[in-house]
Image (spheres, rainbow, N blue to C red):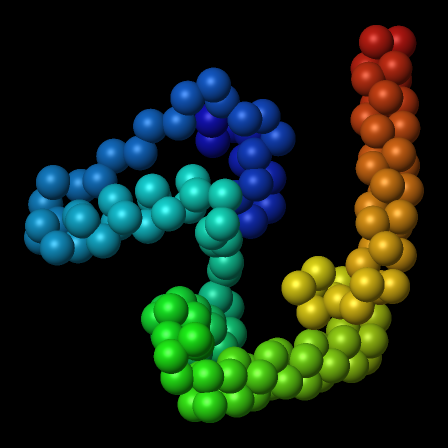
Amino acid sequence: MTDHIWDRGYPDKIPEEVVVKISGTLPGYIRRTVYKKIQMSIDRNSRVLLQENSDTRAALDIAQQMEMAAKRLLDRVSRDSKTVVPLLVGWRDALLKLSDIAKETCEIANMEYRKPRGLMTEEELTEAKEEDKERRKTFKAKIKKQKTDQEVL
């Protein structure tokens, strides 16, 4: 497998089965934490992110706490809407502002910024779906060309 690792650990070939061994020398609570993280990485609603700086780590910590709190608050919306709804609206406004800041940062860094679908308006969402279709067509054509080129060799 190590023969096929690209820069930053991305494989060019994906093996049929991946076996991960958690060291037996680690304390039990650390082994359970590592196992839980591996299991979470499989879940379709989870993401694995590289935290390269303390700001990213802080933002993810905040998002994780908000996710847990929002889950609990949503159960109380019907009983305590005067308190809960303004908090959820404030969270959404903060996300929109963070998205704007991320867009500006990406523009300065000459990077493409893709607004999260959860923050898009209906028009933006329709446009994004069309762009995704075009990306898929381009990607499929590129893969087909690579296969054809490999067959020629």
